[in-house]
Length: 386
Image (cartoon, rainbow, N blue to C red; front, side, top):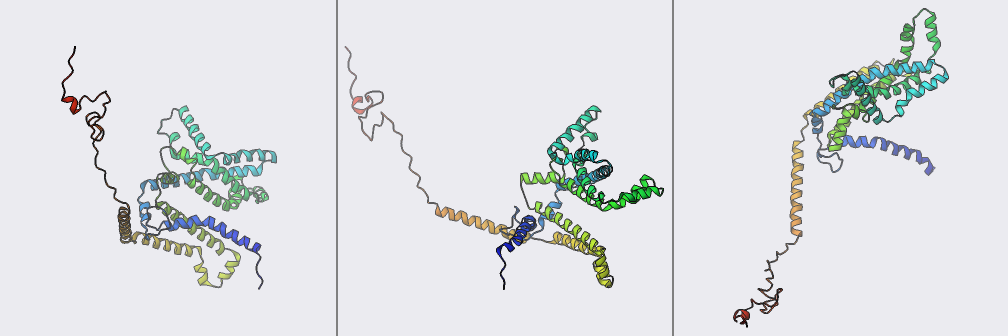
């Protein structure tokens, strides 16, 4: 049997390390979401629990931030997608020199740091509000409004890149033929170009929504006194972690996997080769239908939610807590045994100097001269003067 050379194992080793680096943190976060430890960790394992999902559901601040993020994401999609599509169409219809200049202008917000975009958005709309003497309750100072337009400045550029990659494959003669047949420019756009751009519009919508949902650098300045999902999570990380953060990761991973599975099943279901295979097998056709797959995944999700709500780990958690207390008591007792008891020294009398002398000597010298208070001096009379 021929042995493989060491160099032939390098690609496999590289792929293993790559996927371990890519998915390792996700796997660790999923595991920590079900550990009863108050700090996210895999080892030592304490108890299997679903309490962190309940704590997550009762976190009003996080849920409020999530609602704000969803609202901002929808607003960003509604504004950024039309702007990106218009920019892509404009670039496809101008000359080479003007196209290069416009492309540089449209793509510039991507190269600007998010902190700069956030601060400039805040200052710009503040100056506009001051110009119109708008009160602080107006939309010029509203965090949701500022965040939407702050994020649109660079997310629209991302959308434009998606549209450009699609529109470069568009045959412009189709639009010209529609115009020759009597269609108006609006009809040609709606009936010809827009259906061709539909896949890119869907991809750009998902990209814009996710980019808005996870953005932090710009949002932290433009959201003002409100909060979003990312700002709340960052404050939790800054002031102390608990496994509810891992529970958030589990939910996001589950939603992503469900969406990816349904999308992949839909693509494979309508491919020509797979359609020919399932045409002769009605059971397989029903089982692989995207609607069937969505129903199955929905049922599994509902079962997981019911399991999380009904699972009780209080007994295991109490036992682990009792074991920790017993171990702590044992360590304290062992420490007290190993530490020797030092004898407390008896208090010593202070040196009284001339009154007491050195070690009982009655003739010890006084710091003020002769010891006039010694017994022999007290027994004699004072010398008579002349």
